[in-house]
Image (tube, rainbow, N blue to C red; front, side, top):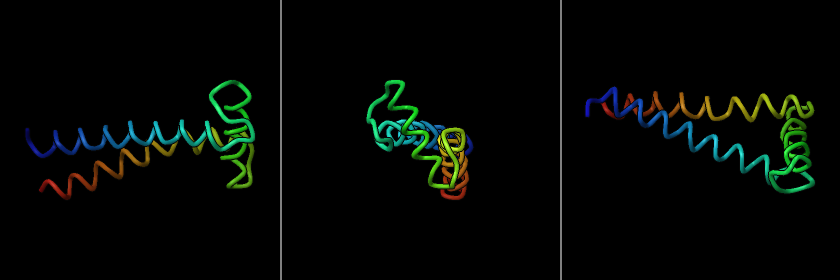
Length: 82
């Protein structure tokens, strides 16, 4: 496997792990835990309140986190596998 393929696989793995972490954070952060409608709503609102926003801000943060983690993992792996 060449270095670019390894870096891409590492980035994809980082994104998947970031997505799992985001889902877990939303499920546990709100006043109602779980992945039901009230749990997701209160979890997103709790995540959004960290930056002074509400549920929409929580959705943006939750969606952006796995992408950022995946990109960062890709670039770290690219440097590591040189």
